Each structure stands twice: as structure tokens, then as C-alpha cells.
Length: 251
Image (cartoon, rainbow, N blue to C red; front, side, top):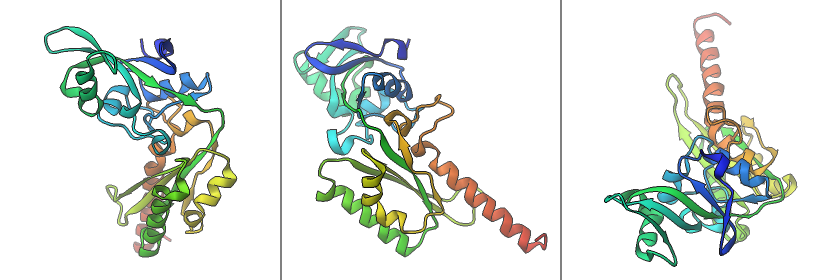
């Protein structure tokens, strides 16, 4: 079982959950949201808990609460000799230190205990797609500096960026996915320079936190961080086809 056994409370951390290996982050976010909780975890629905947490793990709440591995409270792990042990700050401390960042090298984790945090409000999130250029890059870098600076001291804002050329594209695209843990008004204010840079696509809207992390089925994610680049591919593919038709005299 995966999602069905996610929410198992345990002492001494009142806002921690016990999650079985094999759970996907879409399932986890949906389940804990029922209790007005959220955690640092995957932003794409088909990402599993194990690889992300044991290797570090960035999420939309990293600026506020740290990496996913920073919020690991304990694990149940199968060692190479077949022994099943628990590792935490109180038990097998050296092993617990090691699994937070290099856990896959020390055994197979079958159960994760992770901190969760109150999350009652909705969030403002979505993708902005741009044609690349020096001015756009300056704006993006400026926003990154704001995210890493004092203006984002509370860690309520985050952004991811993809720059790539797909298959038959003749032009690259830049897709930024922006996240604000609060209302649209303050989100638009913080990310105003990006919004003013004439994005070709803007999918930002208010959402539940789980929707920002792929609340749909694993193969049909609604998360902008998953589908933003698909939007860019479709957009530039269509423009490429139109340009080809023009060149051969179809328009």
C-alpha cells in the first residue's frame, strides 16, 4: 500500500507523518492536505518519496523549511546483511546522519518519518514561457536574486527554470515556474518584473498546495512544474510549423 497508510502519527513530533516506501508525492500531498498540512517534497506528481528525500530534495517550501532530507525525522531501513533497523536522532545516529543525503548507499528504506507544517492557505503558482534574449535573462536573474535575498526572507517565493530546444524546434524556449505561498496580489507584486516581460504563456492562478505539486494521477499531472515545458514545446512547435508553411507558400 502507498497512500492508504501515509498518515500514521507518532511521538514525539506532533506534525510528522509516517510514509511507506513507494509512495508518490502527488499521493502524499493530497493526503496530508486533508489535515491542513504540507511538507517539503516533490513538485512533480510522478516523483517517488525515496529518491528525492534520500538525495536531498528541493520543493516549493525549501526556502522556508529547508531540503526534504532536513525534515527527515527517522527511517526504517533494511541493511545489506538483511537486518531491519530504525535510524533517528535517538537511535543509530551515525546511520541517520548518513541517510540524509546519501541514503541509497546504506540500505533500502522501507518507511520514512517526515515533518509536516501547517498549510491552510491556497498558493499562487504557474508557468511563464518566454522567447530567450538578453533582456529576458536579465529580468529572470534579477528575480532569482530577489528570491535569494532579504525580500524573500520568509521563504514564501520560489521559482524553477528550464531552457532547452526540443526535437524539431528551431528556437529555444525559457519556461519559468513561479510559486508564491500566499494570495495572488502579493505574488504578482513580488514577480512583477517577470509578468511585465511579456511572457508568451502565463498559466498562473490560485491553487491548493497539492495542485502546485501535481495533484492529478501520476501520468496526468496538473502541476505547472511538470507541464510547463510541454506548453513550451507545443507553442514553439506550432510556430515552427507555421513558419514552414509560409516558406513553402501554403500561407
